[in-house]
Length: 389
Image (cartoon, rainbow, N blue to C red; front, side, top):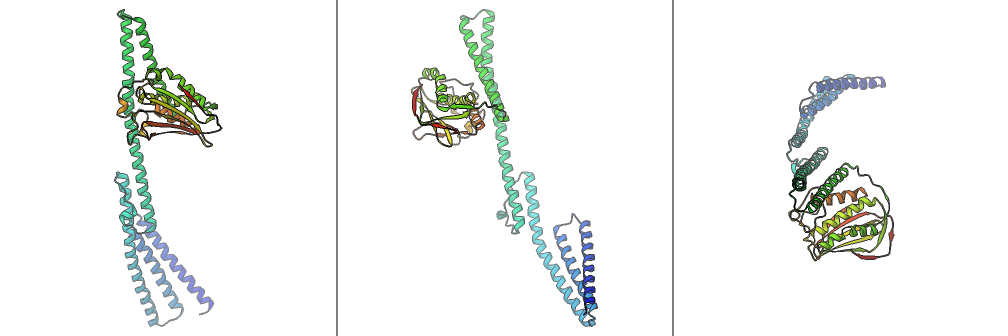
């Protein structure tokens, strides 16, 4: 066979393969919605047809005998038939894998748990990866849905509690104001003092609600300035000294290692005050609350130790949810220095996180609980001191 004949054979075979490929492409376009098995068999049949066509062209160009042509054609057709049969068998496996993916996608939309590739026995690598991704997405969606439901329930509970916490002082204010208005108050000055106290309680609650709203929206504006963390903790302790004394609780501030941190002293002081208030509320008369200030190279910490009943199992994280209150927290406290809506710890954590830190809670080995506020440290002083407030 000379070069010109060979070129003609190659060109003719390529032309036949192109025509067959175009016909297969058009067919697949017409049966777009057909099962994947149909697509696989069509591709296999097109490949076999292109090969058979090439063999026929080559046979004619080589001037083979009719017997040789028939033999070559028989070999091509039998091989092609086997190839198509194999394509059907293997295509059925692929089709079953695609059916598993389709079912997984339907389960994802219907809220049914999606099984992983290991659970379904899916063996094809790419399909296994897709199915595992669907299962992982399903797990994330379920976790997000659970968290949304939890937050929605927490919001509803918060609304109920705030409504109650607002109605109580407002009802007292109204009753005492009406008594003053009617001139039936036996001690007007005492009634006025009570009204002022109730107004302060409502004001604290409204202020806490605004704080939670700003923290949730990420809109808390911080005015950072160099501040001694030890001095800030001591100032907070001094502010609640009278309350602690009245409750019979000993309040101690231990400055193991002071730190000068760049913070908003007003906001961070509020966070520390909320932690101290929480400790005082849960510490019985005759007990003690210890505030420990310690700084390292990376973090500065204010740890508030109380002698209360501790944290029930599973409540450590829920403590910081806005409005959440455990069973023990629902009972009246001997010390009442917060608005009572269960927002103090949520505000403390939000302020700490706004400073790039966090607040955590654990049970102390000897009883009680320890709430630790940690923020990035910018400097430390080695001078320790102890202050009893």
